[in-house]
Image (cartoon, helix red, strand yellow):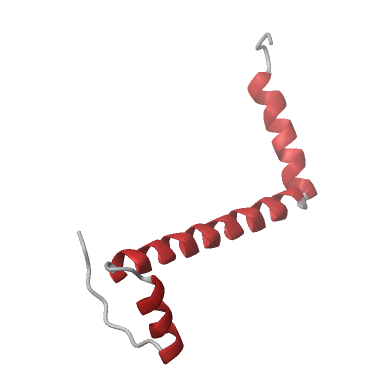
Length: 75
């Protein structure tokens, strides 16, 4: 499903869109937004991973759960 949005671009942004957007400017903008969303998600995941890695209590709990989960399982 496609949705419509109306927004205002400054002259430089509009000139860029006209120059590089090709015939389907909506597809071009959608592609830019997908890339930006992916970069945002990657940044959030990295931040969460760094936070977890720096939390000694959380790391200890993970280690304890690893022992519990593997208890009695032959490797």
